Image (tube, rainbow, N blue to C red):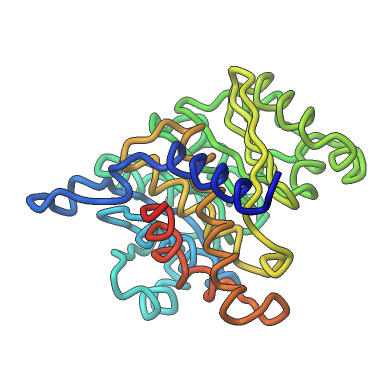
Length: 301
């Protein structure tokens, strides 16, 4: 097969992944037509993750994004979030999510279409309890990442399977290993089977990140992504993916389709960014800035 025919086949696949809704818009639409993402993230010392996640949700087409963070980091996050609605949450003594945070979130959840949960929330006990409670009680699609996944370390089968709404988890190999109580080597030895098994057993959509990210559905469907590059192995790129998947769910895609399309577009954005600045110095902000171009590229194909 020639390289050009391979590219043609990949272009055709990209068209099937990205519905027309995400590539062009009717003239008479408004922001309410494109969904409302609620991001619950951040803690003292971890203020970049919530900002990146929320910005990526906007760049991936969400009409509205609300970002809820512990009150200690509110002013830091708000100063970096011009287009995002930022809300301070009551916090624990250590500046993390708490039971009082969950109470305050009730009114915000009523307005949201999807919850992006976990980036930078920390592993403090109060944050762990808050994340577990949200997953078990919120009747919305949830995209769970980073410390949000860590809240279920070693207890995936007992607690993560209790999710009230549909759930997408986005672990890197280390987080997946911690979640299952196995080694990273075990996860990497058979990434496809691990993702498929966890998705089926826990009834969640799994995005197992890494070289050739694997997306697996509870029904057994599995795909392997081919976009992306080693330059994306840098802090913050996973937070972008969480926001992108959440935005696609908010715009009407089912969790598996949103995960598949989000992973593809995230990797494509990384490839476009690397073409500009190279791989070595690539940072998450470069990928963020290239998300619109990734959608534009998909639309042209």
